Image (cartoon, rainbow, N blue to C red; front, top):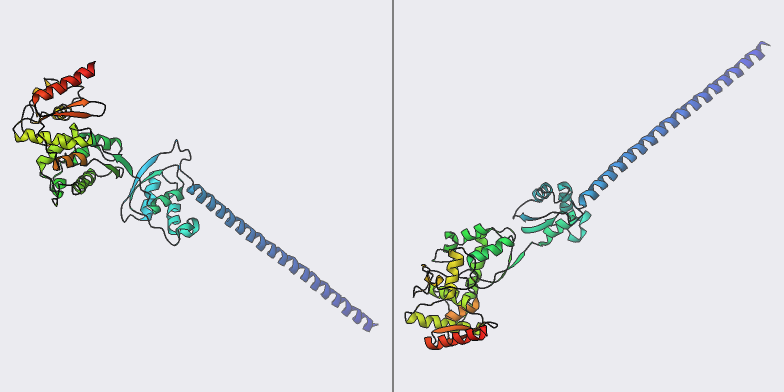
Length: 385
């Protein structure tokens, strides 16, 4: 009996142990599940945070790449000068400060790692120094391409033959090449004059008329140097110049007068011969162009419709009706036709010329004052009848 009771007790103890073990196992399983769930939730949160940061970063980059002002009509354009040796970071900061791009940081990263956004540039991007026009309506990558391709902002500027220094200065100022007063001052700059061996008070006469491609907001001495250098380049190509690098100043003065008198190219050497014949006999040149120069350039008055007898009496060394010698300096900046005409004047015995075809700008040339008066009278009779 006792033996059976002991046996039953052992069986009960064994059952209790199994139950305890089962309970322990269930508890451990539930705890592990909770830990795994917490870990997965943490990973999901981290992933969401990373995704949010990436999305925010993409949005920031996308916004940074967009124009500062998408509306082209409202966008501001500026000339940007990139000096040699300027760092990409400095360029980026300057553009952001001037509100031409949204982000200097994105600009810098796009240039430094072109494989991400600018794959067509290969291994690296190098900016070329110069002056560029940048608009707020440009995308950031477009601005980078302008600098990398060297698409500089040239200003095509045409300087006609026969203009004075002041008239050229006005054209340059209107085209925003350089300031009017800076150009005027540069034409008298001793450094510029000595550089080209010009033994005169200024560069009047040496500013060659041509079509130029200037940079915006250039240094005035640089503009003057370009024009004077072009003068000597073209001068060396003219017949009659020979190997000389310069030109006799008296010939330059005469060419500036011929420039203002001729209108038909083939007449320029004949007009030059008239003035040369007059000087050789001590006659005054009697050029109306010199009177116009006095009125407009020295007196600062509007261009006259007609030259009056009162104008012919103006007391000035530039008045070729009052003085028989050449004026003290050029009255315009002559082109190749006038320069060539003085270097290669026609051989004539003419002492007079008068306009007789206003439509073509052609003149009648005369040997005597009587013939000259007759030609002038005939033209006036035709004109008013």
